[in-house]
Structures are given as structure tokens and as C-alpha cells.
Image 1: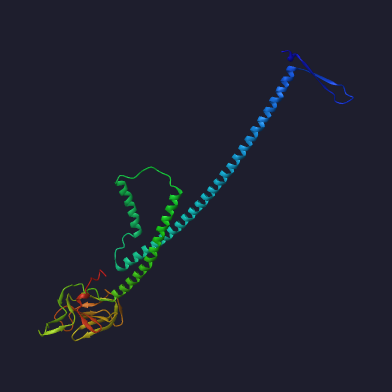
Image 2: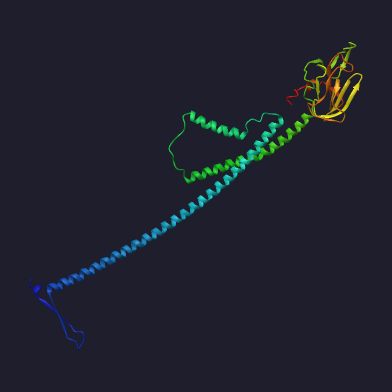
Length: 334
């Protein structure tokens, strides 16, 4: 251990005019200082290497983070675009739904008009029936034991598929409505024409009585008892009973003749005429417009008659036809 006791002298000469400075260090102190310096160098080198390694790792992590951030931003941007597209699609579907409601209301109105035209009890509309049906379905579900199940999230792809399916359904319904509305309009026009034709076609009994006392065609004359041609039908009744116009038309004759007594001839459309004879009183006048069911006179027994009755004729394009097929309804059912 003698080397530890050895001393080393270090001289420091700042310049030629300065005093020489001496430092004495023992071998142990010098060894300790040398070890410290070496340890410091090793520490610094190790710290530097660790720092470089950490810097590289941090750089790599930053790069990975930048890539991940870019991917996330792209994904987020795509999601935003997708959400925007879904919102646009939903807005379009909402507009289509509003348009569909309006169109269905138009169809419902047409349905009501058609029912009113043909005298059908309108009852609840199609829309109210559908709403009632939905309530009935809900009640039926409850009566059947209810429904339930796990609540699971809906994926974006499923939502997009639902939107596409809904759009296709709306487009299909829209096409059907596009076809239905014109068809209903055509049907309405046809109904209007049919009602107009029906209005001028004799279809009701001209009296309250339904008692036919003599039919159309060949019969035994009530006065001569010989076979003669009867150009109409006789409907028995009571003097003063109202006589109704069998259809819309214009009175072209209203007067008295020896055979028909007090009588009225009404001209309808399409070459159809109706003739009412043996009245006790004429109410309609020549040139007046009458509607189906209007009172044109009163039943009687004027002219060549054996008792109170109405002799009723239907003339089509100048030829007498059997009135019985035209006696379809009562005045109240028209």
C-alpha cells in the first residue's frame, strides 16, 4: 500500500512573470480523481447513447403518431362525409314522405269524391283506416303477449342499407301513385259522365205506387176487349198522387188529348223520351227544365181511362220500348 502514500506534485505556471503554483496529490486522490473522470465520461457517453436512442424512439413514435393521426383524420373526414350523405338522404326521404302524404291526401279526396258521386257512404277515409289499423296492430301485439329483446346498436352500413331500402320503397310507392292519380282522375271523369248519363236516363218509378195494372205489349183492350198494342205500362194509384219525372230533361209537351187526357212529354238526352198520361193535374210547363224526381203532375183518370192510374211510356229514338227494365230504383235511392 505504499503507492497510496506516494505524492504527486503538479505545477501550474500561468506566465513568465507569475508565481508557480504547486498542487500536491496523493496517489489515492489521483486515482480517485481519475476514476471519477472516467466514470463521468462513461456516464456522459451512456447518457448520450440513451438520449440518442430515446430521441430515435420519440421520432419514430412521433412519425407513427402522425400517421395514426392522419389515418384518424381521414377516417373522421370519411365519417363526416358519410354522415353528411346520410343526413342528405334522410332529408330527401323526409321530403318524399311529405310529398307522399300530400299525394295520399289527394287520392283520399278523390276517393271521397267518387263515393259521394255514386252515393256510397264515405265512412272513414283510407288514411284514418290505416291509422286505425296501426292502432289495432299495436293492441294485437299487446294481446299476443308483447314484444322485447336486447337493444343492440345499429351499424353505419346497416343504417345506410335501411336508408337505401326506404328510398327504394318510396320510389316504388311514388311510381304507383304517379300511375294511380291519373287513373283515378280518369275514373272520376268516367263516373261523372256515367252520372250525367244516369241523370238523363229514366231509372226511377214515376209514382210512389208499384202496382202495375197493365203491362207493355199485346193486351186485351179494356173497352173493346180486342187484342191491341199497349205502348207503355199502367200503374194504379189514387187520384192526386204525385207523378215524378223519371230523369233530367226538358218538357216538350204539356196538354190534353182525347186518348191520353192530361199528359206530359219530356225529352231526355240520347234520343230518349218519357210520356206521362191520364193526369188529374199538370204542374210542369212546356220548355221547363226538370230534374230526376221532380213532381210534374198528379195522378188521375182523364182521357181514355177506366180509373185512376198513370200510363207511362219510354220512347227510344222514336220507338216505344218496355218501361219495366227502366224501373230500377225508387226516387229516394237516387
